[in-house]
Image (cartoon, rainbow, N blue to C red; front, top):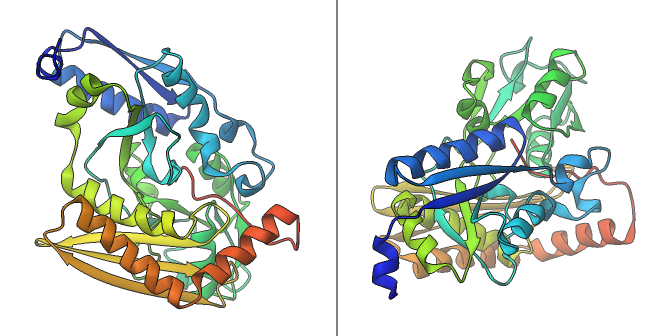
Length: 336
């Protein structure tokens, strides 16, 4: 059977591997519904799984394996044939996929921005000095500390419902979450203020969903092609190129965000110290980019950050984590 026949023969059954958190299951069900619309006779199942990232809640992810802890078990299910594909929040996907895996499709992006969530206050500006702000992200942590050094920023782990429960019982005056997760679960009313990119530059891939498959499944890539959004893909590939070039991981406060302005793609990148005392910024644009141009755009921004000393920050923070040095409050940008 040739590749053209494979692309036109609809699938009989597909299995989606997913984490079992409410948000992850929403994402898997969203893709399941889209596949049902494309292939009404296809039996699309969801294989719910618990990952190590879900199990380890008492330590920062940078000390136990990083963002890959949210995807390894799902990749194992794809590799051994229990699942055909896995749905991920792209900001949770390591910048280098394991050999033999590929992103089969990147879906249209939801709101990429961070959001301010609080039961008592309307914005970060309204918080009194000493107020406790929770975040899962070094990136968000550094940006809050840069603008609001009088606030007490503390780590916040757990899935979306767990984090909101900690806020509601008074452990935090406010928490910072990805707007996309709240919107997808119908909880947009919890957002007191939306932090635009000038206030909190998003993480690479934030708000976008990626579908991971085995690289040797061309027929599967063809079946997923109608779900692929090219503009979103070019934006997040440029963002991921910045993070990849700088060894992006949960050990480093790093942001990369690309926006379309008509046919031009504008990319901004930030690398910071966790305490916010030093913040490096770079930006560049490309007109009507294809994939190669989007990746080159990412390299231009990462090169400018490197010229400003980004690798000095990366190397110091990586050494601190790996050598068990001073207690820098590290966290992960994972799951809202």
